[in-house]
Amino acid sequence: MDAFARLVERLRRDGVRFVVIGLSGANYYARSAATLFVTQDRDLFLPPDPDKTLAAWRACEAFGLDLVCGAEPLDRPRDRLLAERVISSQALVRATDGAGLDVDFTFVMAGFDFERVWSRRRIFRVDDVEIPVARLADIVESKRRAGRDKDRLFLATHAEAIRDLMRSERWRAADRSRRRKRRKPPRKRR
Amino acid sequence: MLPALTAGDGSPFSPQGGSSNVGRAVKSRRRGKSAASAPIELDEAYLRAVKKLESLPQNQSGADKSWVERAIRGWRDHYARVSR
Image (cartoon, rainbow over all chains, first blue to last red):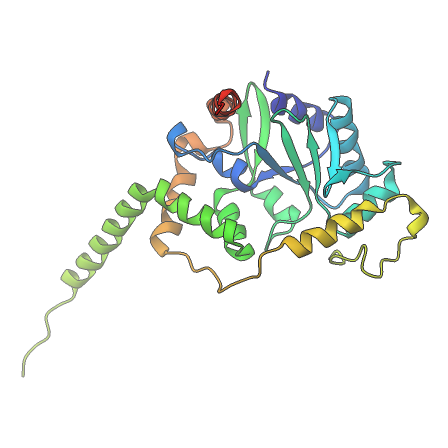
């Protein structure tokens, strides 16, 4: 089983709620491997719950993953107080095996609170493990709101990846508009 | 609502608390943030296409996405083997 799927299974077993967001979340909606975003980061959006944050860190440690905050190892003791501090400062904690598995635990998704994203999530299966993923529309909207250069790049690349769908949507809209015009009765001339 | 970005900026937490790198991480994150430029406006056709993509049968809850992980792993392994 994939290392990420194993971690997800453990998090779910420990009652840690999370939603996959960002590029890694968008990837689950890709139609083919050709349109996947090549990223090794997994962005996991967590609720602001210190106990469950602590449970997430412990699950990572049990898997031998290093926890990093900024450029340094996450401080010790890794207790409830530290979890509260990380949550209140909205700091990002990364779990990494140093060999390709990088999981970012975040408390921020621009424009959204956790409960809203959670209530709208999709649940996909990977190796029979259920993975909660944010709605693609929510990922796109959060990227739009964040408005950083990397978000612009994502949106432009994603639009390119689904340009055939966009084209068909444009045709459909044009067709609707033509039909509406045709339905209008001609004006009477006086 | 959570208080935004407080640690390391007049933080109420004691410096003896043993969790000093959280404030530094937040500070460096703030420094590294690219300045927000003009708001992004999305094309209506793009938004409709996103909705359409979401509504495809393969993108409903319960869908098997193991292929996504396999493909990403394949890419990763490929790039790991690349040498100059």
